[in-house]
Image 1 (cartoon, each protein chain N blue to C red):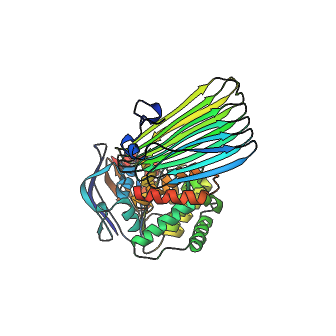
Image 2 (image 1 turned 90 degrees about the vertical axis):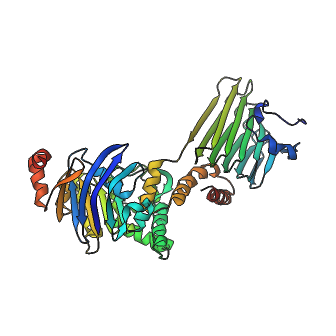
Image 3 (image 1 turned 180 degrees about the vertical axis):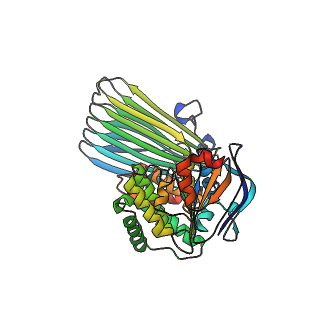
Length: 240
Length: 247
């Protein structure tokens, strides 16, 4: 795509197009894992950044991708993954934003061959008037039997002005597949916050404690789990 | 230590406390008894500062401070502990982390140094042993998967760790079997029966008072204290019912 996208393009529907214009066009990064290869990648966005990544996984290849999208400004990660027979793709992502920022993760995961596994876990914490988006399509091609796909998308809104858009999509052209998706957008439990406060935790610390656990789910099992979790907590502190 | 004067409070615009007055001195244990809907839990939550419990009149003095002007966490740092009737489950947050952060937040607010990890764990194990709670439970997420009795014992462990000056215990006896009731009662005595501490025990039944002997018993009905007496009053209530005593 060379022309600047518009809101009519589904994948850019909630994007911050004003912030996109100066950095357009976006170079596509390509990752290819051959049969049986293992790979992992972590991406921490703490400035403004737009990433476009295309991943091809050969038969039995395993790829884990972790994203901390705590952009100051517009932060977008688009990833298209094609899975070979028995390949595994794992996405663990956390997005944190405040002010009037937009952060988004757009995924397309294509199960092209049988018996591949994809897992996507996205956790978002949104404050102020920030917008956090997840657009995720899982495509199961004809013949890709034994597919196991999962999308778990959750967002916490810290302020009434914050917005979360979550759109998991399934396109299934094969029989005998397992595809689950779960989606929840909510606020911090008020009873829980009062309970923590009643033990002496100031409001910011009480919220941080509850959100730590929420965000940690995105990075469970990552190679640099501790580093990602610590970076997420630092980003969290600026929102509370 | 605690002086409640003419306290009125509403919940969802409904008046619940209607001019309640009560005075608690250091070294005393007071039991608040009363029928369902009398306002017992509202009293606890109002003193704890729970959002949604709106004070519409009166005052509460706690050790010379205007308690009602403090935020919930400031009340805790000032020495108030609220034992919940239904302790809240907080998935993903370990008991140890929660309590250590809470204690150190209180210490910081009082200008004291934080407790080290080792010193905290020693304290936590000691209090868990006192309440006969498996110390491994402290590694688990706050109250998640705890039985009713474990939750209540965990509340008392929290009280032991936080070492408050005044504990308001809201139906700590509900959901406890006879053995757990005894353990909790003994825990309350061990932690709070001190000349510089006081307890407000909110309960429906006399049975907890077999283990924690109150110095004063008050009957709360219709949002006010309608009768006060010594430990004998609890026995009288048990025998005759609230209706006879309140009337």
